[in-house]
Image (cartoon, rainbow, N blue to C red; front, side, top):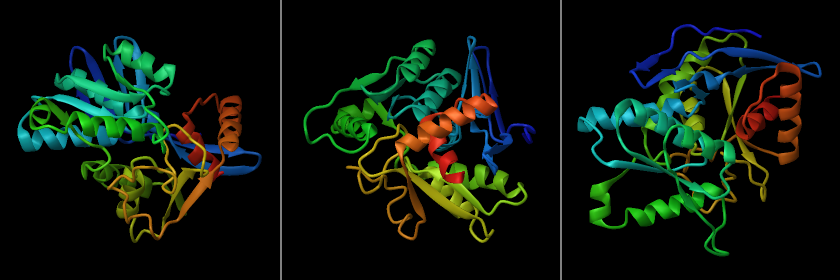
Length: 287
């Protein structure tokens, strides 16, 4: 494995929580004679009361919060965000640092692990259940519709703030300004594989790596299958505005759920790395 941990780009610290963002390590992975490199984005991490957690979503979550505070001085509303997991967890951690109230809006299909992390952070999610046959697409699509209803009145918009990772320009900007710059320091990279969820990493990396000769490949689940954290753009009832029109020239590739499970087991067996499903999906395509 090859590490280049360096110093974090951002470090936030108070008496409750410690957060570090950026300059994540690079791991050299070899499986069955095939070698690829993995950006260890779980080092975008926080430590809170014995809980340690990290993900790539800490980058855009921080950029969205920081951008709002720079424009408005502070967050004086209750933040709500539809999320499949890691963006919500990152915002929950940031709420402990900045002191704002936060409600993640999640599907009832969200994993027990994610719900457990919210519990450890003292955050109570709003759980959305299926309402009928019209509920199609990703699990997050249902949560998005729910938040849209929550903010449908002027009074509710005075009470709640939706940072909206699906439209917020700070989401792809985080990857354009940080992740892509770190990738440019890695020698021998021909292509970068990233998952399609909000579209933030795909769009931001394409912009940040433009002209470098490095191809950016988006990964989505096979049509008809669901992988937590990812969406198939042809299957989703909601296309995030961030990625609308940005993926027309591709390339986008699909991954089978069974292959995600296969590489999850291989990475765990050989490297003791237990990655999330969306990370395993990108790892399989890189492999």
